[in-house]
Length: 190
Image 1 (cartoon, rainbow, N blue to C red):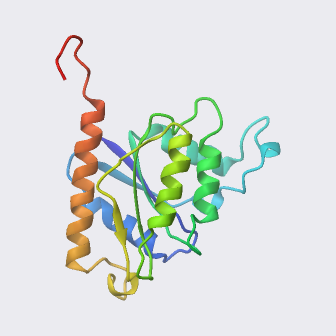
Image 2 (image 1 turned 45 degrees about the vertical axis):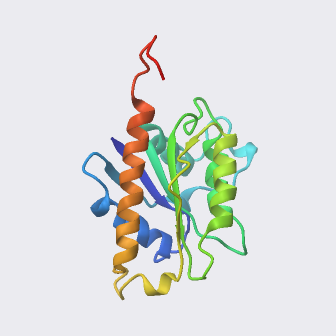
Image 3 (image 1 turned 30 degrees about the vertical axis):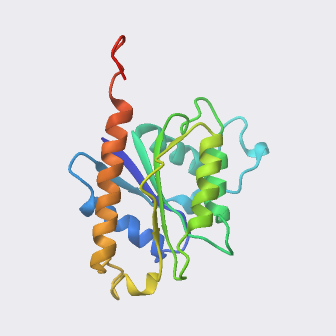
């Protein structure tokens, strides 16, 4: 299954971008992960920019999302809130024909230098995605904290507990999406 993974920060060496870079090596073999790193090319949402066609950065993002069978979003949390760049992405993806995140399985995670994880940002992102018709994985939820202790100087994820937690999260995502995709047999008992 093809999965698009993206970090919700524009900073090149953001902790969430680093987590996303670790995803392909930790994901089960059933997931083919591609990392999207062009979020900076998506302008601020403006309905005036939609017609006659959305800007090229938006079109590339929509195309990448449309071609993926699922998404993973690693969101930072700024000032106890969802970052503007992540909300902006959702706003663009909620528009157009077809709406590319509608019925799209999405897993949310996040990492922050602070002690609280990204609970508030993830909650707000979950709400916005659900409002757009996306299918957000309910559990497990992964809130990574103390980001400065999780990576080496080259940005590689080295904390073994975090590596294990991320691998478990990805395995759960693969299982969950597989269950979503199973055909429903008419007349079968639940």
